[in-house]
Image (cartoon, rainbow, N blue to C red):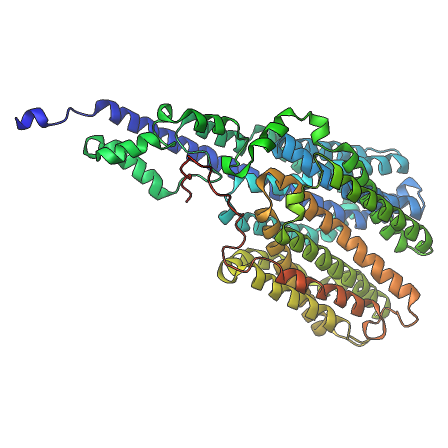
Length: 583
């Protein structure tokens, strides 16, 4: 009697268990490999762009002599790049949201490599300017995708560390740029500076094409029925629970088995309800079905590709940002106040037209849900003000050290060494501060340090030594890196995953427009204010830049306050569906 009640050996469930565990191990290996590749592409891509901007400054005098160009033509090698980048960053992010960040990144990286090689072989200054504009276009494709790929590859609670690594490498590249550029120009000439960018961008472009896209991986998991479609994979407890269920199917309670048969998820995709399967098929990418409304899904499927990109909005935004950057650059030149003012007025007109168009567009380039997000807007505003204050202060202080104190460029760079060191070594500490104190307190501390550094810098007199200058530089570096990492994390976390590219474009736009605004403000005050000399304590430029730095304080206070405040808001599950398990 007892023998008849003993269940038969569970050979088939054991086979299923082995297949399940093998599948989980395979997906874990693929996921880790894909994340490592995405992190490598993001970090190297951002570092190459930062390095390219700093080494070019050192190479411009040699370029001018070799190509027999005038100063205005040489300046356009920088202005053309800046205008192209700033005008296309948001549109490039939209392209990544629509067609995949990995593809857009690969096109940008390979195009950047080709343009860099072309500049190294350019016969004249006109070709250099044209190829620099092309390089700016490719850089605009590349930069938002570096953040968009991170957003889709890493869970929100693990995203702060990759962003901190990316920021640290950017700081290292920016600090090493003048040294590397000077060594290359001295040994091999200015063309070697552009050849420096070819191997890394070519390598990461090919790596991005070879890397399996995280979105496709998530869709494959959902289609196989092994994991419920969600923005994060199940945690270790969930996997252990599923494995234990397979190990001993005969000991499971009937009500548990009934519940599992009714649950869409790990083992029985055939028992799922038809409406749940239809919802999963209608859900693109990594977004859970609960985060997209049915009418939005139907509209996206019915929208032609060009109309969904909002070409008129992209054109107006490109005109507004391009004219703005051009106006700020022109205003910073001697005698360029009038052309700069006209360009800025044109940017205001284009911006007004863009605002009217975006309110009426069926598929706006700047999604309303992104612009209505207070953390995203506050994060972008903090980055804009912080970058303007930092680069404006560096511009004024560099002239103070070289023209007033008569220091050579190397000694001047050594005075700013604390800033570079804190940028590199302070970035990895920022995720720890965010987890312990939350984004609001962390960013507020960074804003206070940045403002204090600018204020103390504005009080230096002509006899200031290395210690006070280095102390101010340390405050600026600590404050800026804290703000940059925290604000970038909030912008990327809080943006819906469907708009991660646009959010990355906004972040990069702030980081490109801010320095131009800070330098233009400093130049105008130095030229227009009677006491606006390069001695900080006697001028008005650095106090004005300190006031700009103080604008980061209200922006920082508008960031999320909790230690888990950087997580994106979750929509409630749809009726009739069990919420997916999140680790």
